[in-house]
Image (cartoon, rainbow, N blue to C red):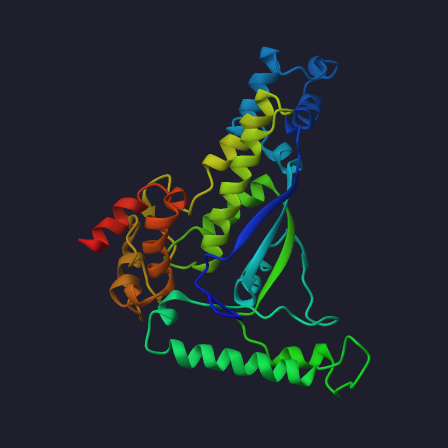
Amino acid sequence: MMSGVQNGYKGIEVEIIGYTKHPAKVMWDMLKQTWIKLQDIEYNPELPIIKEFIEGSVNRRLNPTPQETVLIQCVFKNISRVNLAQLTRHRGWLFQVESQMPQHVEHNVILPLNIVQSEFYERAAKLIEESQKLYDDMTKGNDDGKEHTVIPYQDARYLLMHGQTCDASCSFTLPQLVNVCGQRLENNTADEINYAFRLLLKELKKVIALDDEMDKLDKLIYEKNLERCDCFGANTKRCFTCDDVFGNSFKRFADGNEYVSRVTENCKFDYTKSAWYKELMRIKEEEPELLLSGEKEMIESWED
């Protein structure tokens, strides 16, 4: 990493800043209202009837909607504005994003690994450096009240790169996380945001495992849902999500239908030239705990 340039996605971090600590009691208090004979039973994780109902909701044998009361808050740190544009498309999520309008940005631009490892790196780094220097020159004196330039921050930001990093705090429900992972953990269509969600899952699993205040049903709710956090089709080991950029070229799973096979055969780009291909190779060596089931074998098949 050089000044103002972040080589690849590895500088991204995720911090869990809040989560529902006792979801089982909230879920039980909602679930029991359906049955008159259960309404007066107070929450106790040792009662078999409560365990049965919580497990039934989590496994979707009973009404699963009480799980929507389970909230999580996190901060994505050092993500690019490209990533931010994808992240904020998710309906139902709440966001608060670092602003470029009232303050000087901290220059840091993510440069994808395939560019870093190419003959274009020096030119790209120089372009970023020139952009940052121009921004600094235009906004000189805006904070100290002296030698004001005529360009306020909110206008100078138009000269910044899509790769400029920022922090974004998010709030979402546990079922929303499972659903979004279905999209964002698909190698054929997601790259930087794919990496960010892997970090989110890693951190969330860690804080839940270390929380001594939660009872066994509280942890069960999180653990069962986090087990489901994978791309659509992972449970059947078939790929159903792709587009005409790479098709199903990454081949973690076999083609799910004729459409996927046709799109893959006629896709526009070589997946081995992509930044995500380079990142997965790096992750295998440096952060193997982020790999999903079958990905180690997938990457080894590329190397063969």
